[in-house]
Image (tube, rainbow, N blue to C red; front, side, top):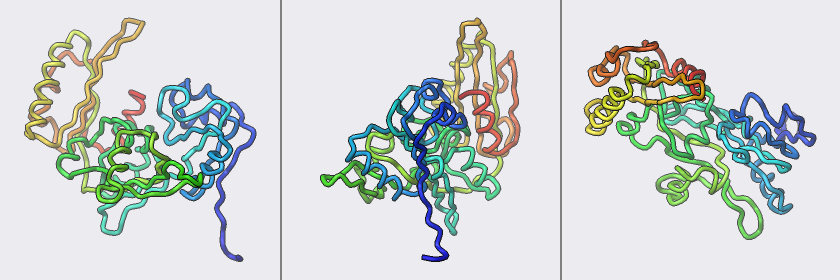
Length: 308
């Protein structure tokens, strides 16, 4: 068929240590140290279907890599088996009516925000840019726009997935949403990759401009005050007093004896120092405070640099 380009998945038969680690993708040394027999990089759902069907018939063990951020060996890589690497399936598309953002399972949150920020749009997503969309969406998660889920409704509208093999050992592609295969839809949202290989997510989009966000770091001497604030903040947030504020508090401890408390704050309006956060922003002493008017791309980049 002249003039038609046929896209084929890439199959790497000999697997070097550099390819095995895929150092731009695996966060954990546990995953980097695992060496598969080969890696497949599919470009379409049909590629995955063919690969999984062949692997199942051959009784070959395999693992699936989305963003590669899981920390235990074997979660997104496999020793002496086949790793299906979804990094080539990272296309992001916004519908014409700006209501749906379709995201490939190989994308990362930094890619999603980088595309949506100039459009003044967003979705309910992760707080660290290098984390994969698939792993965070399918597992338990803390989100930069968690409060927006309450305002705008369910963040994931539809999941395209390749499910377990049928009796003929052929992989099947299914679309799951609240009305079509609702049981699978519920199972996938928290079930990780235990129910199939997701190829695409459709997220509900909403208007989002600049945010007031950053990191506030305190010494451990402020532990009691930080915890008191967090309890009060959660109570007020739960009561719906301010649906624009999100806070994640991290207490760090390490062998060097240097410990501190990190507060990751996102206020989804370009307004400085809202009342609900003043007990935190006014708490002293502070080791650092970089709260500023910015966009989500910037804050998730800082999230990746400050915390894996």
